[in-house]
Structures are given as structure tokens and as C-alpha cells.
Image (cartoon, rainbow over all chains, first blue to last red; front, side, top):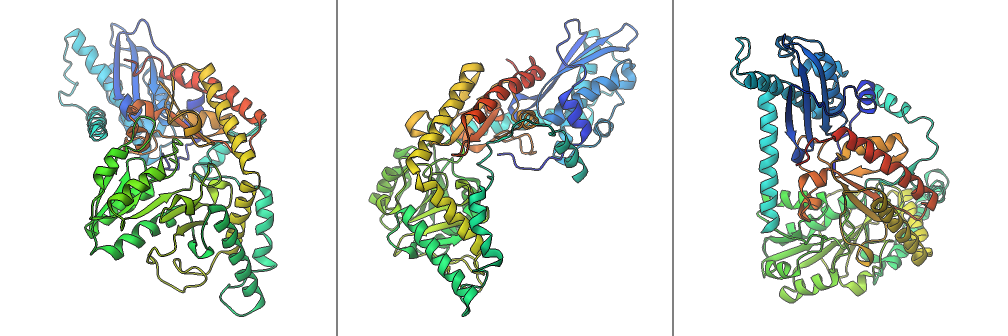
Length: 166
Length: 407
């Protein structure tokens, strides 16, 4: 059972109750996912991007806790109207700050939200077959962390399954 | 952090009803229990029960009478078999460590199941340091222990077996008598412990008839105060202390007895047993009303644990698919319904409840699980209120999930 005390701040609670930009976007230019239902944390980002590489609108869906929902919501707010190049510079800590701070066990929610955003940006350029000079070839910190979390959950699920059938 | 909590609490203002169902993790203490405890803080029996003055003798008297009553409810042969401890965790630690550590020359094998409480799992992990190995018996998809595997696991080296009578998370009533016979047939010397905290006051239990060597019971699980429990030690079974200090009336636990808590535990037991059949029937009816109500209004739900007679009277544990558990507990709390979840979300471990994983629930099913325990104090109106709130909460959280994670 989960037992760690989680004194969420008012901003997280407000965004949990009234998330902004929630829901699937039918006319999205790009869709990206981070996390994995196995770890109880998964985010889908939908971005509508203009020909001038500006994020016209953004929305999300989240299978996750209150912090997951709040950080996803805040990222979609932050990037609306932003040039992609500027959105790429968002570091997860600024997302955590934007929701008024996160308990340490919830840092990964902010990281996952930014990981999903960076995956979406990468995918957008891959789909267009363009490689802007500012787009780092190596995965960013958030992308790496998202991948690590996904792999860890997969590994644990497999191990549990194996133990369970013995 | 405290400021945040103040804000969270403010968000709950104006609730028209509150229904507390997280009786697995703590419970409220009924007024009638508190009233019996209060005099022992300042009016009588506040002395040390081992000392020679009136407040000490008063304490001694009430502790002995309490032990006598609890011995009666448990079906003990003598009052000596009841040992008060500060709770279930401590009683389980005492049972596991207090037997094995003194028997290291007789064997180093321990047998438990995959669905034991966390404290049992942690003690057996700790005992590795002393050379013990632990076999975990698997369970089927309703949480029943595999008796064949149990039989295979027991040999002459087995010193201790610890299996809960009722599972704390999913309410499975184990075939504990059969398990005990299997163990004793293969090794008469092996000590058999059962955590009966979720059985005491909720299902039939008579320790003398059952024949186990050790059994744990806990006060808060029957709406008594926290911080008190007991370990039953059958006459002739040797348990060594795991803490040292001044010994008073309790030979296995040092320190000055907490008389008011013992009084409260005893009163809670009396209330549970004075109308035992009626209380159990009431809890069972509300349990089924809650389960049937949820299944009748919400799609994609799974009951964790068995249905009917083999499920303990108070336990409801349901997985809501596409619905993350921690988010659901917060949403329900804001509506005045207090529950807990087997979700891993508040930990960085990513692992959900080991009990749900052991019965074959997928991780995402376990993350969406909600555990509720009804009490004799709950009313039909309480359950109706819960049944009005849960579908709305699930619908909202599923709305946030949308198509995420749907394969």
C-alpha cells in the first residue's frame, strides 16, 4: 500500500481539480507518449504546430496521480504560443516550480511531462525529416529518465510475473 | 509542507457527509471506547502495575481482568497465553524473531506466503542476516495459499511457518486449520504463527480449537485505540524477548504497561463480541451492498479476493481499470469518502501492492485498486453516499486518462 505522506500544494490541487487543456486533440500535428501504465504514470501530449514552428495549441491526457496531472497541465499552458525552439529549452525544474513545488517522490512526474514534450518535438522533426541545428542528437535528461522509468517498470513487471508463476 | 496540508484541508470544507473506509490503515475510536479509557489517565490505575500502592494495584487489577477477557474472546486455555504488545507490527516481530533467533541450531528455514503483511516480509528479509532462508508459498487468483506447495516446502529444517488467517488486503479467509495440519504432519517441531488481526472480531476464531502456536491480534483493527495489540503464545511454546528492559506484568515486552490502551483494546473487543453474529452479518451485508453497487454502476471493474463466505465480513477491494488509484483517493477525499489504494504512485519504487501482484493482477490493475473496510458503525446511508460518489469520481479520473494507456 502506498503510505508516503503527500502534502500537495494548492496549485497542484487546483490543477488536479480543474486541469487545463485536457483531452485528445483530433487535429494534432504530433502526438507523443511518456511513461507506462505499468508504473502507474503515463502522459500523452498532443501538439498543433504551425508552419512557422510555433506551438499553436497543446493538450494532454494522463494516467497518473495528482502531480502527474498538474505537471502535464502546466506544461501545456507554458508552451502554448511558444516557438518550438524555446519549448525545447524547458527544464523539468521550471515545471516543478510552476506547480508551486513538488514533493521529492513526485519529481519524476515533472520529469515525465517534460520528457513527453521533448519526445513530441523530436518526433515532429523526424516526421518532417528535418534536423534543426539546435536539436541535440543525444537524448535530454528528461527523455533519458522517461526511458529509464519505462524500462524499469517493464523489468519489474516481467520479474514479478516470473516469480508469480513459479 | 504543513501550510500545504492546511490548504488541502480547507478544500474539504462544507462536506455534507464523511464516510471513513480506510480501516486497514487506521480507524476512528468510538466514544464509548474512549470513555472507558479516560479514567485510567488521571483518576485510577495510572500507577505502575508492578508497584505496591493503590494506583499500581488498580492498574494491575484492570490489566489482569483485561487479559482474562481477551483470552476468553480468543479461546485461550489460560490468561498466561495473552501477551500485550504495542501493536500488530510488534507482535509479528516478536513472533518471528522471538522464536527463530533462539532456534538457530535446530534449523534455518522459514515458510510464509506471498501475501503476508509487509512487517512479516521485512522481518524475514532481516533474518537473512542470521542465515535464515524464507520460502514464500504462492497463492491462486483469489489469494488462497497453495497447500500442495506448502507441503513441499516443509521439511525437518523448518523452524517457523507464518501464514495470516485472513488476508489484510483482499479478505481471503485461508484454510488455516488444513495448513496447520500439513505443517505439523511433516514437522511437529515447526512453530506455526498466524496473524489473526483481520480475523479477530470479523470471522470465527478460537485459538485453542485451531491449535496454532502463536497468533497476532491488533486493537485498531477492531476500532480500539492504536498502539496496542497482543501475541497469543500457546502454553509450552517458547518465545524469547526481542527487547530488553524492566519487565512488568508482560513477560515478553519490557517497559511500563500502557493501561488506558489495554482498557480501550478490551472495551473494543467487548463491543465487537457482545453482538458478534449481528455485527458480522451487518458488515457482510454492507460489504456486499458496496460491491454490488459498484459492479452495478461502473464498467471495467474487478473484485480482488473471493466472493461470499470465503471473504471476511468487512473487506472490499476493487480495481478500477484506466483509473489511477492515488488520483482516485484524492478525488474521493474531496467528496468526503476516505479510502486507500494499492497504487505505487506515492513511491518511487513503481511497485504496486505485492498482494495484488501475487494474485495475478497486472500492474495497471493493481494501480487502480481501492481498499475499503466497513465497520458495524456504518449505515445504509453511508454506503448509499459512497455509491453516489464513487461512480462520479471514477468517471472524472477516467476522463483525464482518456485514451492514454489503452491498448
